[in-house]
Length: 113
Image 1 (cartoon, one colour):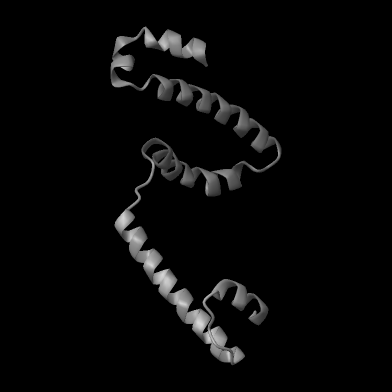
Image 2 (cartoon, one colour):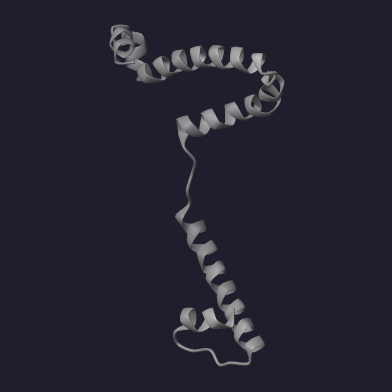
């Protein structure tokens, strides 16, 4: 792979876009796809591959290239909701067991469950 990157780096257009490694990877993926398609056809698995795997490729490729977003505000909000729900479940568990909630809820819940 390093050999191809060095060869493609000589092309200033590709290098100026910063896509050298992506170009090399796409070449490898294409050749891998050709070999995979041949093996899948031999085992009569090519049609399921086309119907199941291929439709996912575009989405997975975008995730690989761009990543996915993470919103810390939404995370904090969801965390608060989950913690509140957990507290409600703990209270219900103690009420059902007819025991009082202790300060060390985790260790007190284990015998109840």
